[in-house]
Length: 327
Image (cartoon, rainbow, N blue to C red; front, side):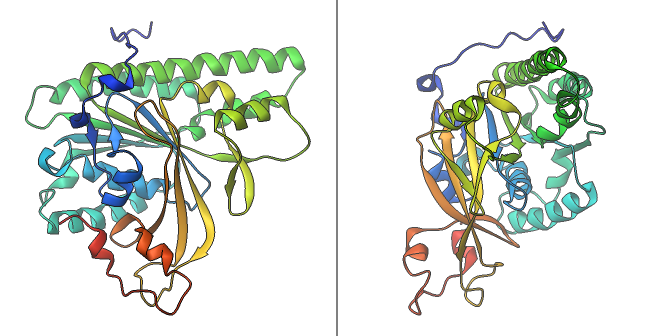
């Protein structure tokens, strides 16, 4: 065991009540995700850089605070970031919090309910120790009017970079030994997170990178490709989720976000114009759907079909991004 006293239990999708799904903060994304992000699950968001994975995470940190009548969980969040500048994330989070507060969905003090932890280094054992300590934070607010309801790790792939580098050194026996050790570490971390999710009725969201799928036929790549339901394409490149096939069997839900070559008219949309795609690859509670989305100063927004229909014509309707925001 992990020494936490938590024993994860297998739970069928039909056993998850609707009130254990919390909003993404966007109605179009909610529809794609069969309501939103499920509780008591480990949800992985896979994608290349500049797909907006961190933007999604920051939006979820605030959406978790929304009142239950608006699809939130009325709870606090823990955000563990393993790469990048925490100050940049905090500035962006502050801007988003002001927008959510202006809609009356979170209080002006929303940032006080979000705990940020910078994970130094890329050792899996260090991350496991961080998560063991996190139990104290979860229990501190358990039973309060605002319990901790969301744990985010952005990104989990960075935790195993050091182990991936070791895999490339030595002979076949060393490689297999390193792979077995990494698999055990992945299992320990995910089981700990699943235990928290089940015992404390919270959601866990992880982000993961992708790797280019190159070279000839590779049995491991083919099995991983099939586990994703087929080819994954981002920026016109064939890619695969990083961290290997074993990891893909540990998470409950896998979502794939990617960059497309489609553009929106920047003069009509408050955005860079880059259109991205969100796909549900597998989940026990969500259907395999997909939608296009954009990122702007107000957050991450799924695109209604009406926007896509007129995307490349002069008759594209005038659109205010706040129309996508919650009332």
